[in-house]
Length: 304
Image 1 (tube, rainbow, N blue to C red):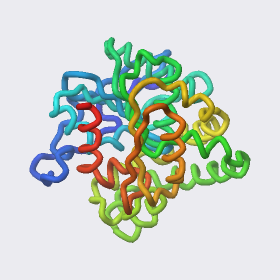
Image 2: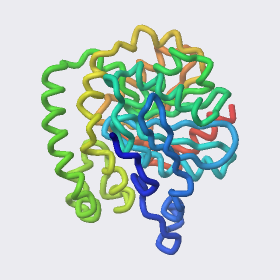
Image 3: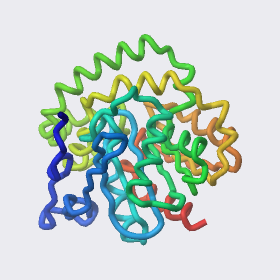
Image 4: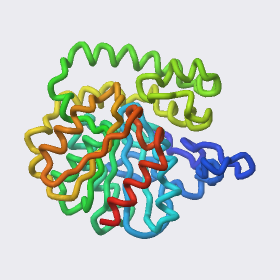
């Protein structure tokens, strides 16, 4: 029988005395906002803050709910129910019983919102693979998505990728990141190691605080990585993007080394009415690299 997760799993330490003003997330007792939700017979780790219109944040490949630490408290304070989840096979959520796929992840989000008793449509914000899943949710269950935010979303270049070499490389990377998972603290605290670990994800890793870098690396080495990458490469999205009917914002870093910035222009062209914002000197995780700018863009989009 699978272990039922405990309240202490997957939570960053909180301590108001040590939290700088620029990082309010460090002062939060995250245990008071954590829920374990059973979806399709498996446990999912969910963080929910605040009350108001639902705002769902979806992490990417090798990510976890902590990818949204700079957004959750800000939007809870702004009058939203800010929700972040570890997708099945990532963070501390259990692997799904069935094969990982992009449609299955979208269906998981739909059922998760049902389990959280979110009855109305939500604004869904997805980074990388999470953007791919968010777009699929908007296509499969359009009444569920009021607004869509694609943050360096996968789904366009991936449909042209050479699968075998990437999956082989991903398996090797999975072994390396699993080894590094128990060594995140020294990697996060030493600028040189931080640059080594995050240089393909973040434009300037040394500008992240050590605690935030540590939480960003918490997503690595999880069992869902390789099957999710394979699912991402196998599932077509491009030809259906014209069917998305909700308002869509596209946010990208101009120095993204994971998903090329050219995909931002393609998403904008293919999704009716979509608009894009390109952030200069920024990498793959704009919400962590430029949190004040990102949060301002999201607030403006929500107010439209």
